[in-house]
Length: 168
Image (cartoon, rainbow, N blue to C red; front, side, top):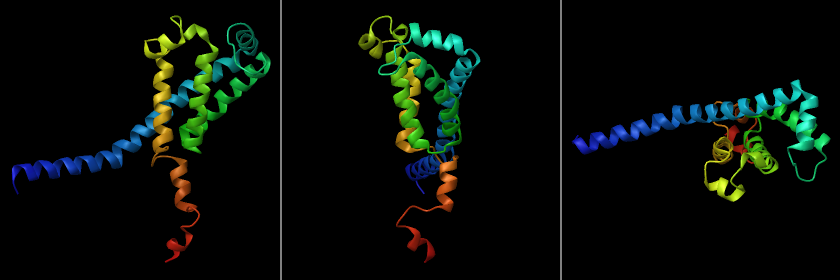
């Protein structure tokens, strides 16, 4: 075997190992990282409901919702959805939901973009939210990965139309 063939073989083997082990681990880390951020925000809101109500009444400008409703809804969304995301249950749907929720959070709190929304979008403003958005989009695109409840459930409940193939 020539050196280029060995290098190619080594590269292909490394890529296979990365796809099999590193990919699922990276998706798990993204899920847990973003889930932790939203969970902690929910706990802060839950621990101080009066302060949360004041924030939603004075600082946050959530579109289409009354401040009291937005405060309660935001708190419970941040307490429930991180568990779904972290465990990878309804992973793509949960990631998409939190992606939209993240956008609403950024739009609702103008303090995140002191230089204006559009300049902040391409600049350094609300950079944490941008990173979370990228992670959530990756989870929407690739799903929660092999280390998820979704993958576990897929083993026991095959997709419609594949049941006949499973019995053969």
